[in-house]
Image 1: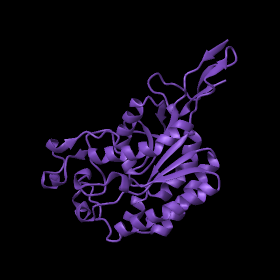
Image 2: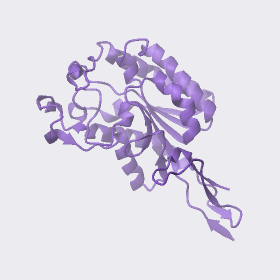
Image 3: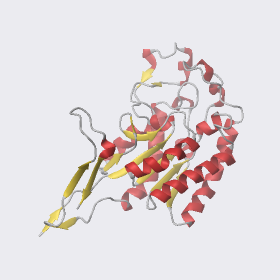
Image 4: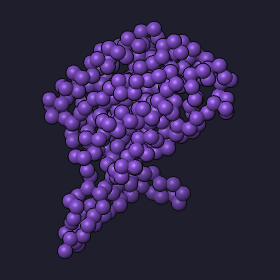
Length: 287
Protein backbone atom coordinates (compact mmCIF):
# COMPACT_ATOMS: atom_id res chain seq x y z
CA UNK A 1 0.00 0.00 0.00
CA UNK A 2 1.32 3.42 -0.94
CA UNK A 3 0.73 6.66 0.97
CA UNK A 4 0.37 9.85 -1.07
CA UNK A 5 2.71 12.66 -0.09
CA UNK A 6 2.26 16.37 -0.67
CA UNK A 7 4.73 18.24 -2.85
CA UNK A 8 7.33 20.10 -0.87
CA UNK A 9 7.58 23.78 -1.78
CA UNK A 10 10.17 25.07 -4.20
CA UNK A 11 12.50 27.18 -2.07
CA UNK A 12 13.08 30.51 -3.80
CA UNK A 13 15.62 33.07 -2.56
CA UNK A 14 15.09 36.63 -3.86
CA UNK A 15 18.69 37.86 -3.70
CA UNK A 16 19.89 41.40 -4.26
CA UNK A 17 19.74 45.01 -3.10
CA UNK A 18 16.93 47.44 -2.20
CA UNK A 19 14.94 46.58 -5.33
CA UNK A 20 14.71 43.06 -3.95
CA UNK A 21 14.15 44.19 -0.36
CA UNK A 22 11.51 46.91 -0.92
CA UNK A 23 9.99 47.20 2.52
CA UNK A 24 6.64 46.01 3.75
CA UNK A 25 4.98 49.41 3.85
CA UNK A 26 3.46 52.13 1.68
CA UNK A 27 6.64 53.02 -0.09
CA UNK A 28 5.94 54.19 -3.60
CA UNK A 29 4.59 57.15 -5.50
CA UNK A 30 1.96 56.91 -8.18
CA UNK A 31 3.52 58.72 -11.13
CA UNK A 32 6.49 60.76 -12.27
CA UNK A 33 4.86 64.13 -11.61
CA UNK A 34 4.75 63.34 -7.91
CA UNK A 35 8.10 65.10 -7.70
CA UNK A 36 5.99 68.26 -7.60
CA UNK A 37 4.12 67.03 -4.55
CA UNK A 38 5.30 67.48 -0.99
CA UNK A 39 7.76 64.68 -0.12
CA UNK A 40 6.06 61.65 1.44
CA UNK A 41 2.58 63.12 0.91
CA UNK A 42 -0.07 60.58 2.03
CA UNK A 43 -2.08 61.43 -1.07
CA UNK A 44 0.57 59.92 -3.31
CA UNK A 45 1.25 56.64 -1.51
CA UNK A 46 0.70 53.40 -3.37
CA UNK A 47 0.80 49.86 -2.05
CA UNK A 48 3.80 47.83 -3.25
CA UNK A 49 4.51 45.62 -0.23
CA UNK A 50 7.67 43.67 -0.82
CA UNK A 51 8.11 45.03 -4.34
CA UNK A 52 8.27 42.44 -7.11
CA UNK A 53 8.20 39.63 -4.54
CA UNK A 54 4.57 40.48 -3.75
CA UNK A 55 3.41 40.31 -7.35
CA UNK A 56 5.50 37.27 -8.21
CA UNK A 57 4.20 35.43 -5.15
CA UNK A 58 0.61 36.13 -6.14
CA UNK A 59 1.27 34.89 -9.67
CA UNK A 60 2.86 31.64 -8.47
CA UNK A 61 0.02 31.10 -6.00
CA UNK A 62 -2.58 31.54 -8.76
CA UNK A 63 -0.70 28.94 -10.78
CA UNK A 64 -0.83 26.65 -7.74
CA UNK A 65 2.96 26.38 -7.64
CA UNK A 66 4.06 25.15 -4.21
CA UNK A 67 6.82 27.53 -3.19
CA UNK A 68 8.32 29.37 -0.23
CA UNK A 69 10.56 32.42 -0.15
CA UNK A 70 13.69 31.98 1.97
CA UNK A 71 16.42 34.27 3.25
CA UNK A 72 17.72 35.97 6.37
CA UNK A 73 15.53 39.07 5.98
CA UNK A 74 11.77 39.45 6.32
CA UNK A 75 9.67 42.21 4.73
CA UNK A 76 6.30 40.87 3.59
CA UNK A 77 8.02 37.51 3.15
CA UNK A 78 11.53 36.14 3.52
CA UNK A 79 14.28 37.29 1.18
CA UNK A 80 17.99 38.10 0.93
CA UNK A 81 17.66 41.71 -0.23
CA UNK A 82 19.87 44.34 1.39
CA UNK A 83 19.36 48.03 0.74
CA UNK A 84 22.44 49.82 -0.54
CA UNK A 85 24.56 46.69 -0.91
CA UNK A 86 26.95 46.01 -3.76
CA UNK A 87 27.57 42.66 -5.43
CA UNK A 88 30.76 42.40 -3.37
CA UNK A 89 28.83 42.81 -0.12
CA UNK A 90 26.30 40.22 -1.24
CA UNK A 91 29.15 37.86 -2.13
CA UNK A 92 30.43 38.14 1.43
CA UNK A 93 27.22 36.65 2.85
CA UNK A 94 26.58 34.13 0.08
CA UNK A 95 28.19 31.15 1.80
CA UNK A 96 26.38 31.72 5.08
CA UNK A 97 23.05 32.44 3.44
CA UNK A 98 23.13 29.50 1.05
CA UNK A 99 24.23 27.19 3.83
CA UNK A 100 21.50 28.33 6.21
CA UNK A 101 18.56 28.48 3.79
CA UNK A 102 19.52 26.05 1.01
CA UNK A 103 17.33 27.48 -1.75
CA UNK A 104 16.42 25.51 -4.83
CA UNK A 105 16.38 28.71 -6.90
CA UNK A 106 18.07 32.09 -6.45
CA UNK A 107 16.63 35.18 -8.15
CA UNK A 108 19.61 37.52 -8.40
CA UNK A 109 19.32 41.20 -9.26
CA UNK A 110 22.14 43.50 -8.16
CA UNK A 111 24.75 45.91 -9.43
CA UNK A 112 23.03 49.26 -9.10
CA UNK A 113 25.03 50.17 -5.99
CA UNK A 114 28.30 49.06 -7.54
CA UNK A 115 27.82 51.78 -10.14
CA UNK A 116 26.27 54.34 -7.80
CA UNK A 117 29.18 54.34 -5.36
CA UNK A 118 32.74 55.43 -6.05
CA UNK A 119 35.55 52.87 -5.58
CA UNK A 120 36.54 51.09 -3.46
CA UNK A 121 32.91 50.50 -2.40
CA UNK A 122 31.75 50.78 -5.98
CA UNK A 123 33.31 49.38 -9.13
CA UNK A 124 33.32 49.73 -12.88
CA UNK A 125 31.65 47.13 -15.09
CA UNK A 126 34.74 44.90 -15.23
CA UNK A 127 35.14 45.04 -11.46
CA UNK A 128 31.45 44.26 -10.91
CA UNK A 129 31.75 41.26 -13.24
CA UNK A 130 34.67 39.94 -11.17
CA UNK A 131 32.58 40.38 -8.03
CA UNK A 132 29.73 38.43 -9.62
CA UNK A 133 32.06 35.56 -10.51
CA UNK A 134 33.23 35.35 -6.90
CA UNK A 135 29.62 35.26 -5.73
CA UNK A 136 28.73 32.55 -8.24
CA UNK A 137 31.78 30.48 -7.31
CA UNK A 138 30.69 30.55 -3.68
CA UNK A 139 27.03 29.82 -4.37
CA UNK A 140 27.77 26.81 -6.57
CA UNK A 141 30.44 25.52 -4.20
CA UNK A 142 27.87 25.44 -1.39
CA UNK A 143 24.95 24.28 -3.54
CA UNK A 144 26.17 22.64 -6.77
CA UNK A 145 22.60 21.86 -7.85
CA UNK A 146 21.32 25.38 -7.26
CA UNK A 147 19.33 27.02 -10.07
CA UNK A 148 20.70 30.55 -10.33
CA UNK A 149 18.56 33.00 -12.32
CA UNK A 150 20.21 36.35 -13.06
CA UNK A 151 18.43 39.51 -14.10
CA UNK A 152 20.12 42.34 -15.92
CA UNK A 153 20.61 45.46 -13.79
CA UNK A 154 17.63 47.75 -14.14
CA UNK A 155 18.29 50.97 -16.04
CA UNK A 156 17.85 54.34 -14.35
CA UNK A 157 16.30 57.67 -15.27
CA UNK A 158 19.47 59.76 -15.14
CA UNK A 159 17.63 63.07 -15.38
CA UNK A 160 15.45 62.38 -12.37
CA UNK A 161 18.37 60.90 -10.44
CA UNK A 162 20.07 64.30 -10.52
CA UNK A 163 17.49 65.26 -7.87
CA UNK A 164 18.36 62.30 -5.65
CA UNK A 165 20.01 64.60 -3.03
CA UNK A 166 16.50 65.93 -2.30
CA UNK A 167 15.59 62.57 -0.76
CA UNK A 168 15.20 62.69 3.04
CA UNK A 169 18.39 60.65 3.52
CA UNK A 170 20.36 63.13 1.31
CA UNK A 171 22.29 60.79 -0.97
CA UNK A 172 24.53 62.10 -3.75
CA UNK A 173 23.16 62.27 -7.31
CA UNK A 174 23.67 59.36 -9.65
CA UNK A 175 27.12 59.54 -11.28
CA UNK A 176 27.15 60.68 -14.89
CA UNK A 177 28.79 57.41 -15.95
CA UNK A 178 26.25 55.20 -14.20
CA UNK A 179 23.95 54.51 -17.20
CA UNK A 180 26.91 53.56 -19.37
CA UNK A 181 28.33 51.31 -16.63
CA UNK A 182 24.97 49.53 -16.29
CA UNK A 183 24.83 48.96 -20.04
CA UNK A 184 28.43 47.70 -20.13
CA UNK A 185 27.85 45.29 -17.23
CA UNK A 186 24.61 43.99 -18.71
CA UNK A 187 26.44 43.34 -21.98
CA UNK A 188 28.94 41.14 -20.08
CA UNK A 189 26.30 38.96 -18.45
CA UNK A 190 25.57 36.59 -21.37
CA UNK A 191 29.24 35.55 -21.52
CA UNK A 192 29.40 35.05 -17.75
CA UNK A 193 26.27 32.92 -17.78
CA UNK A 194 27.56 30.88 -20.73
CA UNK A 195 30.85 30.33 -18.89
CA UNK A 196 29.16 28.82 -15.84
CA UNK A 197 26.66 26.89 -17.92
CA UNK A 198 29.54 25.21 -19.78
CA UNK A 199 30.93 24.19 -16.41
CA UNK A 200 27.71 22.29 -15.77
CA UNK A 201 25.91 24.73 -13.50
CA UNK A 202 22.20 25.52 -13.79
CA UNK A 203 22.27 29.23 -14.56
CA UNK A 204 20.33 31.50 -16.90
CA UNK A 205 19.85 35.17 -17.67
CA UNK A 206 16.86 37.32 -18.52
CA UNK A 207 16.79 40.94 -19.64
CA UNK A 208 14.29 42.68 -17.39
CA UNK A 209 14.71 45.98 -19.23
CA UNK A 210 13.77 44.47 -22.59
CA UNK A 211 10.86 42.58 -21.05
CA UNK A 212 9.47 45.49 -19.03
CA UNK A 213 9.85 48.32 -21.54
CA UNK A 214 9.87 50.85 -18.72
CA UNK A 215 7.87 54.06 -19.00
CA UNK A 216 8.27 57.09 -16.67
CA UNK A 217 5.22 56.07 -14.65
CA UNK A 218 6.93 52.82 -13.66
CA UNK A 219 9.67 54.59 -11.72
CA UNK A 220 9.78 55.93 -8.22
CA UNK A 221 10.57 59.61 -7.65
CA UNK A 222 14.33 59.66 -8.19
CA UNK A 223 14.56 57.28 -11.12
CA UNK A 224 16.36 54.32 -9.51
CA UNK A 225 13.58 52.36 -7.83
CA UNK A 226 10.11 51.49 -9.04
CA UNK A 227 6.41 52.04 -8.41
CA UNK A 228 3.75 49.33 -8.36
CA UNK A 229 3.52 49.18 -12.16
CA UNK A 230 7.29 48.78 -12.42
CA UNK A 231 7.36 46.03 -9.82
CA UNK A 232 4.51 44.25 -11.58
CA UNK A 233 6.49 44.25 -14.83
CA UNK A 234 9.56 43.04 -12.95
CA UNK A 235 7.54 40.20 -11.42
CA UNK A 236 6.24 39.20 -14.84
CA UNK A 237 9.82 38.98 -16.12
CA UNK A 238 10.84 36.81 -13.16
CA UNK A 239 7.78 34.61 -13.66
CA UNK A 240 8.72 34.02 -17.29
CA UNK A 241 12.28 33.14 -16.22
CA UNK A 242 10.96 30.79 -13.54
CA UNK A 243 8.41 29.00 -15.74
CA UNK A 244 10.80 26.40 -17.22
CA UNK A 245 12.42 25.92 -13.83
CA UNK A 246 9.18 25.17 -11.99
CA UNK A 247 8.47 22.20 -14.26
CA UNK A 248 11.79 20.49 -13.51
CA UNK A 249 12.79 21.69 -10.04
CA UNK A 250 10.58 19.95 -7.50
CA UNK A 251 11.56 19.23 -3.94
CA UNK A 252 8.91 16.54 -3.61
CA UNK A 253 9.92 12.94 -3.05
CA UNK A 254 8.24 10.40 -5.37
CA UNK A 255 4.51 11.00 -5.65
CA UNK A 256 3.95 7.98 -3.44
CA UNK A 257 6.15 6.55 -0.71
CA UNK A 258 6.00 3.09 0.83
CA UNK A 259 3.70 3.39 3.81
CA UNK A 260 5.51 3.12 7.11
CA UNK A 261 8.88 3.83 5.51
CA UNK A 262 8.78 7.61 5.49
CA UNK A 263 7.57 10.37 7.74
CA UNK A 264 7.63 14.15 7.59
CA UNK A 265 9.94 15.49 10.27
CA UNK A 266 10.26 19.05 11.54
CA UNK A 267 13.50 19.80 13.32
CA UNK A 268 13.77 22.97 15.38
CA UNK A 269 17.39 23.50 16.41
CA UNK A 270 16.94 26.48 18.67
CA UNK A 271 15.21 27.51 21.86
CA UNK A 272 11.63 28.75 21.73
CA UNK A 273 11.01 31.66 24.09
CA UNK A 274 7.23 31.34 24.00
CA UNK A 275 6.79 34.24 21.63
CA UNK A 276 9.07 34.02 18.60
CA UNK A 277 10.65 31.34 16.46
CA UNK A 278 13.81 31.73 14.42
CA UNK A 279 12.61 30.07 11.22
CA UNK A 280 16.16 29.69 9.91
CA UNK A 281 16.55 26.99 12.59
CA UNK A 282 13.51 25.05 11.35
CA UNK A 283 14.10 22.24 8.86
CA UNK A 284 11.55 19.95 7.23
CA UNK A 285 12.47 16.66 5.63
CA UNK A 286 11.22 13.19 4.75
CA UNK A 287 12.90 10.35 6.65
